[in-house]
Length: 206
Image (cartoon, rainbow, N blue to C red):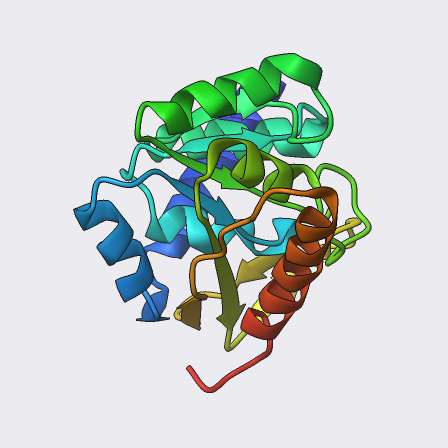
């Protein structure tokens, strides 16, 4: 069976699966306030939690920065079908082109979603790209975590999570993070982002 057909079938199965999930959110008022103010947003989440977050935010027309690796390409096709714009690369890989694209989008009031531990890990360790973009643009980072009551975990570098049918999913939004000028401030913000994402990813009652 051609790879394109296999990928299409997989996307259809994922969509049917996602329609059974029961999603509860907490802290979404942070995103609502920024949107009402017309402010751009940098969403940050761990790579392994992408699937339920992409489903929940489908149709938001955010730009997703994702790896061009094989696993990333499958995810990118699914994201595109769910209404996302996709930029291949990362905030630290893909060079100036990716960074310039993100800055243009944010400068126009758009929204960008980044995975600070992408594209190849280590999982749960934030690289400095997201906070660097936030510092250059003055745009707030909104950290987001997702947990599921039942899931499959893939044997991949990020332990990619696929919630099981009818799983209860909890999505938690942290407070916006503004990165002040200066190298020390950027390093401190990166540590704060990593700690925040890890805290938002702790299993909770859904």
